[in-house]
Amino acid sequence: MNSFLQKSSALIVVNIFLLDLALYQNATQSSVYSEGIKTGVASLAVDGNKNRDWNQGFCIHTASQNDPWWRVDLGASLPVAEVVIVNRLCTSSSPCANHMNAFEIRIGGKENGTQKR
Image 1 (spheres, rainbow, N blue to C red):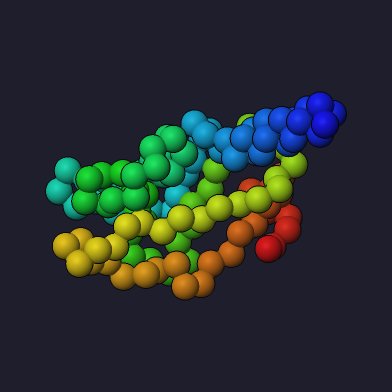
Image 2 (image 1 turned 60 degrees about the vertical axis):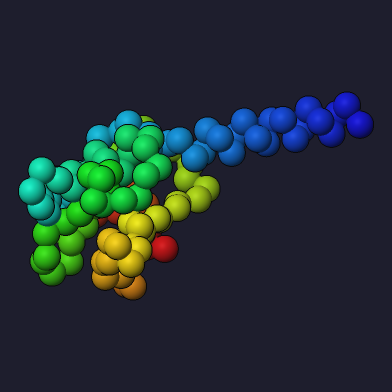
């Protein structure tokens, strides 16, 4: 039983590490949408803040354009087990459109990515 607990603990540590690969890494995007004092800069997606409310200034946002993109540089060649995409918070008091209906995730060492998922 002790061996099982040790293996489980190791898995938990690995999962936590994998979730944080992009945390505080250099992020860029194709354009930035601003509204008043709110500016949806790319670094907001990797700042560790889990608040999804655009009205509070916590989300990235590109300007309206064809083929917008967001990118993060992990700083090294690392295995990626999972990518989690989270949409901003939409409520009746803060309505917004769902612009996440068609997107690509590319993982690779080149600027344009080497693998589509």
